[in-house]
Image 1: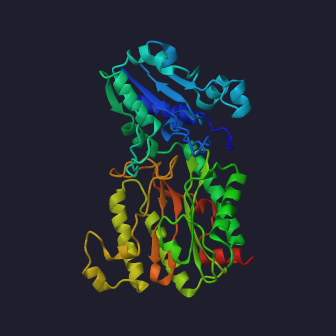
Image 2: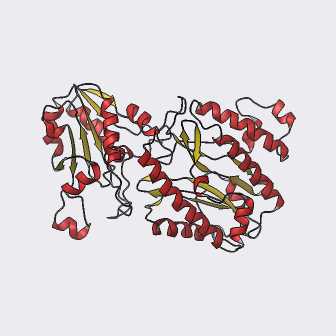
Image 3: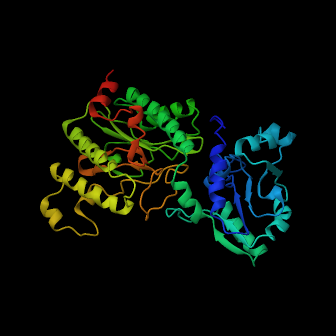
Length: 431
């Protein structure tokens, strides 16, 4: 791993919280993600399963975590099954966890090699009444690709059909939404690296560069500072491309007068940052670009004030829409008649601001969270309003990362003075 060792107290505490929610007489089994084939004999870069990482800190393929707090055999109350390294693996693929390293990483004392692990666990599973299994319960999951936990759930139900199966995700969604202080520190480190990338591209960008060159500057800065890479496919969108919300081609030349929207994040120790910034290609906002940018910034600043304990996320989105509505009227993009005659299911402001304002952030860039329960201290959110005007070739989105506190919030990007004001951006670009 590129990142320094994470304090294993995080994973010890996370497991304690999880097992406290389990029914008596229950076992929980978590698998690492598959290492997917690319083409031929090449593999995609491995990315650990978020739930297994949250509970163990283990960042290696072919890993299995077992939690069975009521097990009469002590060594199976909490254990890991990992790949046993050998001379061949060491030569061809490099280092794998030793048992000592796995214990130091996870805080789990009982480490076993994973060959025929399910046969070894058969008698242990039969001691349990309930089996907790995780699935991908993210409501954005498109069901287009198989994954290890789903395949294992089907295998378990075939081999152990008389057990009672329980969704681990119902527990983890709630637990993962409230961040441990160590997790907030990981987010801070990811955001600090994001700032370095932002400052780098402000100094680099000028008319004539390609969008992918800006992307290259970002990844250089991120990896140079021990990031795993991007936390999602980056958007570097100049001119009218910034009005395509998920534009990832990044293949156009930047023209004089363009406004460039950059939406990217750092994966640092499997924790994600998520930042959107806009910069003028020539180092100077036009008056119209400045007006749209400042309108978006005002909405972001008002919206983040609403991110506090007790706020309901879905109601929050509606309130932010009302704030945006006024800005769009002032910009001449919608009229009071448009608002009067609007379809309540698709308000007038949606023509220029068609997405939500905030999502949970953490191990996943769209992290687990309780969308229909009140916000609470420890939630980590993005705040990212946008205004998109295709007919003018202007797209603006501004995104900061906010942690909710008992008495309000902390903007983790403001905390490190990440440049955001028009004057700051222009000064850095022209320095």
